[in-house]
Image (cartoon, rainbow, N blue to C red):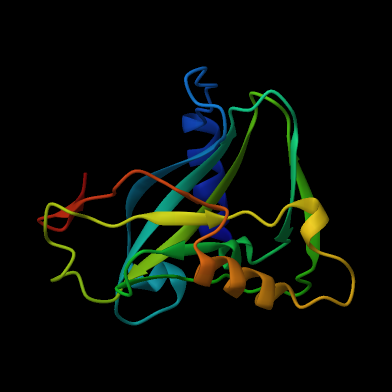
Length: 173
């Protein structure tokens, strides 16, 4: 597991790319599929795993503050298909944190996804990943964070979607 974190840290340092897009006036999500990972690296016997990099870019004129879990930031994300899930790392203290992205800045996360059934992904449509934004004023102590996430998903509210990620011939495009 330590090797995964070292590998992903190197990838972040070598390929960080957050650029303000003056044409866009909101948050933007860029997702890049980095490479395929052998199941043994994530302590699994079988499966199809890929490392990913997410850039949450603030194209607004002001800072953006939002809630996210300290370890399992993936809970703030959804896929538009059921064939892809996150592979969650071990976490010994998962707490809610406020994150802030300055105007023109970005926040980078790296993670691992598991493709459950790539047959239905082998098409030109691809899939999308969405980041569910829980604004600072939308959560208070003793509130149910999961309920807030589910309400936003059900209402399709404050979800920032990346461009399509296409899976063709067992490679992401």
